[in-house]
Image (tube, rainbow, N blue to C red; front, top):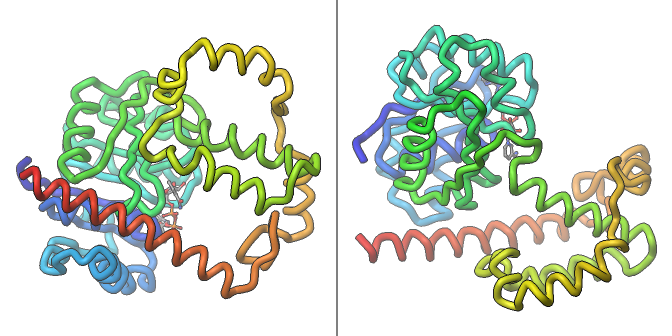
Length: 309
Ligand SMILES: NC(=O)c1ccc[n+]([C@@H]2O[C@H](COP(=O)([O-])OP(=O)(O)OC[C@H]3O[C@@H](n4cnc5c(N)ncnc54)[C@H](O)[C@@H]3O)[C@@H](O)[C@H]2O)c1
């Protein structure tokens, strides 16, 4: 793929990682970040990713950081927006992007929950607005959900998927802009059941997580849920559903236990207590374990990609 000019709007947690992975794929990246403090931190933060992944830091010279939106996006072929999750803000950013970019520039939002349909609703050229839902951290988790709104053209979806695939990501086409897309619907269906079992006293939080990590979670990275159904047989899946589904949690509101924890300030590792209690050392160990695990997977993937070239 030819070198592209890519604008990234917002240089926070997601924006710097998105900029990083696209720079490593050979593109010229211009990150717009309004906070001077965060702007100043970006070179060090992308250097830390290169160190973690043992990538050549020479590629980082392709990333520049800007305090003005226009200088980051005017010549862009594609813009990835990773600004705070507020609809009026994103709508305003997209209106500015429309006036600053050429009509063919792809405008992609990394929103986790706001529909790109709404973000781009008031634009003149809505066919170039697409959702690109990266997962955190975007330079380590390969999936990107590419969400087609009712107006996004097939060509924009295809070009976005090609760009991401070429950058070593695993893009998937989500054909309708539904709440939670695919990944968060699946993740929160599981979370709803886990919280309900915890509240019912079936087991403690650590035990429920052990069932996930040491049970079906151990195979999830190589065997999807529908694939697994085909593997064991749909007849077995049907038999299980006939008896089990009636017992699963079907609430359409957050569980009272979750509301209670949040009201008490027990919001998790940051507070020292959530569903479990955490010392700062235990919380740091979880973060370290996750980062090492994801980095090892990312290195294996890039080694495999290099050997295919
Ligand atoms: N954090 C996650 O796990 C995650 C995962 C997937 C998607 N997302 C989505 O990505 C987006 C960014 O999230 P994040 O976690 O990187 O947040 P963040 O707060 O770390 O970064 C947002 C950045 O945008 C900057 N910003 C503020 N106002 C701006 C403006 N007007 N224009 C441009 N930039 C502005 C902020 O200074 C900040 O650096 C959100 O839509 C979020 O929902 C986050």
